Length: 305
Image (cartoon, rainbow, N blue to C red; front, side):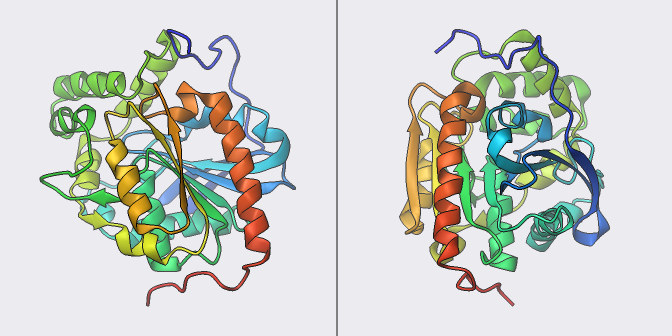
């Protein structure tokens, strides 16, 4: 593995095929982008805590674009999406579930595979809890969170726990120091200067109150994982210091459809740290999930009433 991780900083990011302003849960406006082959199998990418859709550049600007229809979007409170300040706008699982459902519906995705990184794992389980899994083909949990238990924060690592408090305070200097430390903890090898600086910028766009509201929730996705009929891939770095490998093991314990893909020498961002392998495995997983879905249409998990 290279000593410094880069996304070819000399090449500009491609332009999306289409951009969307989507009305999500409770009327919150979400920014989304479409990429790739309009006729291809669908993938939707869900980013993590304090991130944005720009983190998926190594996927949308890759051979995946030749075969798949891909949608990236900014979660509520992040990136170019609306950023309500009230904690209540982040506390309800139905709002998160309806956000994802709205992106799927308003971009016209047909049974997408959910690629859920970090906090995106909670959003994926929120979605299945409310809407069931009949309209998705599978889930790739990428360093994905499925258990959030403040104040102990079981299965979260020091890269998160040692920085979250300062990142959530109304103190800009403390925020900057905390996010810098957090980003350094996200990868086993350092990001190159341009990519690291871009990541720092998109993290700092997120208001600290939003960061705090996200981690104030209590979530246990065990029942949702146990209910899944669709395949689940657990893509997790062995050196992850943000969401510990124990989180993936917890998910596998409760999900009979789950399989592991461990990344040795990789931290919390396998889609950047080993992008070529990640993209190849994602392509194979999407094909497998869609093959499985052909024989299972109409047999998805029922939505909770």
